[in-house]
Length: 399
Image (cartoon, rainbow, N blue to C red; front, side, top):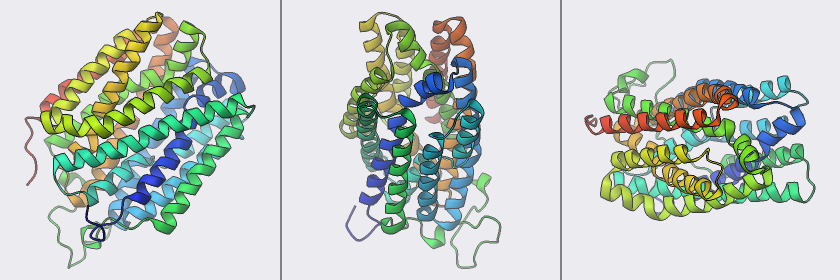
């Protein structure tokens, strides 16, 4: 993008890198914090994730819609700060009820990823190849953060830091990212493209559809179905993976951090170098279909207690994430206009929250009966997302 013609993306990417590193620090820590400090089992972990996702379902739509009205920069800054406060507050939780309350309040922020995707789509020209390149770059930034974060988290635990102290550090990082956004992040959404929440549109605003649901079309509905079904599958992994590696191999949060470190590097490289080329050759739709099928294979292999099979499953899962996750904003950019990017990305994040709300509680129950049932069900969800993506190819893109 030509320097000076559009807002610079460097500050957004820096904010993403810092906040996602803080978030990633907690991925291997949170399950074992719940197991050891709070003393809960798989079903309660699943319940906690489900309730958090329910709160995100509300918050993601709300924050996306507000950003369509007031602009991206103030909402992104506020949500990053909200995330930091939520991370830090978890450190002071003493029982399950307190953790639950903190996670609900944090979930109501809606998360940062969808807002950042809307910011990018505001700036990047409406070209699938170019958008794939920048979404791949954003995915690489997140992927490298997922490399750094778990590694730092594991190192802190190894050097004697307590899990609550790691939560405080993660919260501080998110607050630093919010401060950068407050001072340096430029606005991406032109005032003429904003849609007031309740008041009539300004007379000088150039607009065709003003209501949220006027922008809904077959393509967006298929994307949202894919997001729900894919998130349903991911939720089975989020809720049970710590228990799976503990049961199958005797691993702990240190090993979990190492897994995230290796897969994060691979994911970053794939999204930066391979994803744009694959989309240019196959299109975003077919890239998503193939990635979903690879994800189904990974879940069929995941519960096996043989190390090399588990490694193969992780390879397939990394390929799946690298091929499907960056596809969502690219596809949304094809089917949502500039005035509805916040709304469309917010609903997509809400659909993800819906999937991760439903699946963890079910996954915990299934896992306690038979670990294979949980992962085979997740594989079926990935197959559903592949079918939904096939339907996207038959949907007409808005003019």
